[in-house]
Image (cartoon, one colour):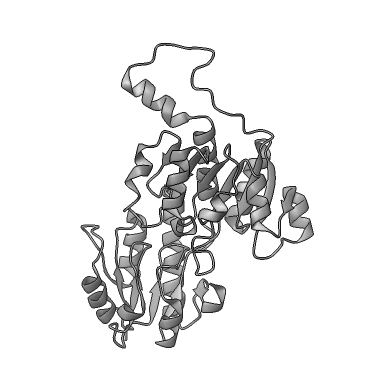
Length: 328
């Protein structure tokens, strides 16, 4: 007698190969229109699903989990960050949470380096001139940027992605520094030729480029607040491919407008798509629409991890990428 298949609700469109495999394994509801679910739709999905597959755009807090009913047993998040999910409340209600760590490391590190180059070498400004048709021709003093070789890069958060950024930066001739909750083992530090700073304030004040690579947690919210941003050198550049909430966006905008920070490259924003409109007006800022993980390969690998987590759970085992509150 065939066993009953799990009921799975997916909140956004996923790569076709992932959706097809899900359909083969489970009873799946897909979001064909790819419109973000509102709170009511999410609550309804959680009541009728054994497994919910959300993304970063779905905020699943304690109030929403309270409406989930008894059927929901697993939230298999499509993404590595889980700051949009109240993991502790989920566990209290007997709902497991899994994520997709590791698969986006190289893609996000590539984007961090791309933003460093884009800001320091003024690539978007050059692109705008060429697209406008107003380029007067080459000049010895036109579009002068800065050389990144020899500059000090400070990495805030030296996990998988931070270390991948460090390897790339070293290849470009940058001097790597970092601040982390825990100091890396000596052999890793030596391999990366990275200098550890116990004091974030002291590191920030000395860096030419600062790369944000730490997760968003209560302790990292506005870690780069107005006071700490003011420690940066006026010639320094800040890049964020992690979570927008780590930086006080309004304070950063004010400092960029005042010339107190030389430039910024941002792929994430404090309030999601509702970013500070004044940021768009600044020529020394490169803004991207959360593209750090946007490779075909990465998004398919994320889906494969979701599939493995759900299938392992369905087979009665612990999902390999189970998230527990102590990890956050």
